[in-house]
Length: 368
Image (cartoon, rainbow, N blue to C red):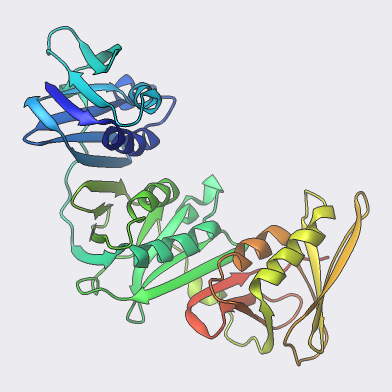
């Protein structure tokens, strides 16, 4: 194999590849990236056996071929080379080395046989549709904060993507808070089987969605999901488990309505929670006649309170929350105002952005 590639293109491709590769690997080949040069492009393939990413980049290919080399090492080398450099990759197939040259820099890297590199088995995808990058970005970005990190409840360790009520819907919950985000159902997604997209995959997917004009081809089977652009293909196993019936925890009878400036609310919660104890992070909300008092009382650290003007015309209510959960939910609001719907101090609270029903958040209260 002999090919030349521009540094920025190689850095971008290796950045995506090395983020999939785990730093500690008991199987040496999984620490490598598979480089395949053919035609006028080079494909970089990396996997951790659960996720596979293939990035295709234009290059000058003098001799087609393939090899595998340490992903993190090659990424570090390319990162430290000067911007605008042309990088030559040369593997004669016999020496077990990949020669990397750029200007006066020369590196000789150990390789492993391409035949040892595991290729994720292709799947029969039952459902295929296309969606604009901003649509998918919104669905996953607004839901991912609520993904559970509790390994024992593995079926909550991802975002549940499915079709419901004529919408493409993403849901995530950890039992303390929940996010439910809807978008218009793309053509072809009517028969979408409900799949749980793992947390790591959601993070890797985000890198495909920066281009607002990109059209993402989505393919789903019961065991895998694939997101593809002409240059990049991300394939992932889905979590093998049943997502709980989230509709039961979304309150429908909450009538006490508070409307508040989302940014002001988030800043006030952040300020008063400075003195909250690390363990409980509890903040109390007291609501009455168009005003909200946020307070924290931590015997070890001190106390704090702050008053905000809000729109609230119901009976007095005292309710406590984990400050971190309130902050994360408030930070999802793209519009100016957040609307909170309460029932009582012991019932889940619902939050949405103004009158927009396409993004709904639920947070459980706590005793304070």
